[in-house]
Image (tube, rainbow, N blue to C red; front, side, top):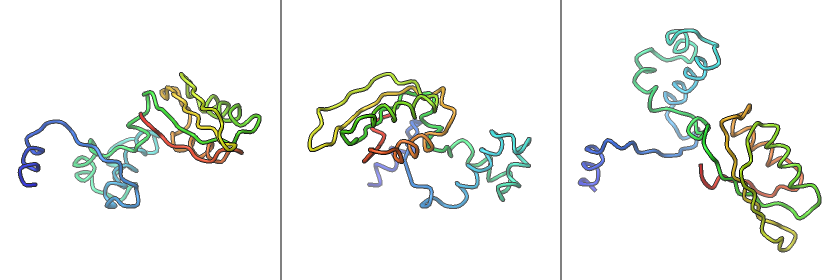
Length: 155
């Protein structure tokens, strides 16, 4: 274990983890909030953004390059979604409309033959043109009638 840690320290390759926001120390969430304030032009300077988030400028600069929301990591990439849908007329069409209205460009659709009234549908989409966040897109799809499950397979 010690050797593995030493190897990681010597490596310049970044290591990434996906962690639920509630499990992160508060400072990371505040840095993400400050970055968001700058992006959305709620603050015009780092000082204003840090003050808005309740952190110091030094804390912002210490973590700013290491903290990114998940949707920022995959924005502008091809994302593969897998869903389980009820075998009912219009379910897939409604989901495709949600993708279209979000600005995602659908590249591929693969549907299994329905079994026991459920079909697995995989959708590959390019996300750089999205006008909503990835989380908003997923919430909209999951809340659509006939959707049993939605997850990201790759991105």
